[in-house]
Length: 261
Image (cartoon, rainbow, N blue to C red; front, side):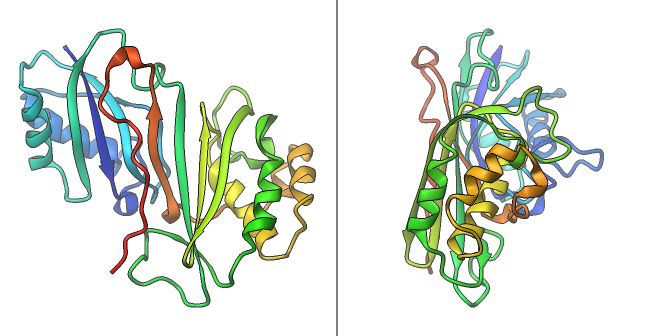
């Protein structure tokens, strides 16, 4: 039987989604919990990897098992064995052809950036931080340059293993909520560190260090060295994955909201 799961996690204490030799990946914790419920080893496949320190409001995974359990048992049983920073939101059986990664048609990310003189305390580990207010309109002008299908080599990590640097960025919306700037992105797929590198470049523009048209020069250069430093992972959230309606999955997109005291 193939089971699909939707889960959320705070990635601050994990070394990213991917399984690690020391067992410190989100994938490791989930596999251990599901194995305890199934009474056998379970391997999971995710819609996409997240960086060390990054979070997810909705990550989709699938796994195969011979164990027969109620859907509620997969949810409650897994959560009973998971650390408090990971929670399974839903579980459901799916057809064997479903694949969490290859069946996905789009992925949503949000980056939260606090722009004030004082570093975050209550939001420590949940947002990125820049020490001065950023010009949202200038960043929007620069962001428009990145929309569409481009070679994003200038925003690609050196260790990225993607076969092609060409990606299609469908959406890059920028909005302010008090002293937190939201960057909302949608694409079918991304390069490693692509979102964080884009945010870093937009901060250069928003801070006045570079003009909005600098973004075009960076994009066209296809040279990572021409861009800005990679921004911190703490503000990055995978907020959902798109799938065709034929799979009849529960909601697979969950917007992130800034926690307030």
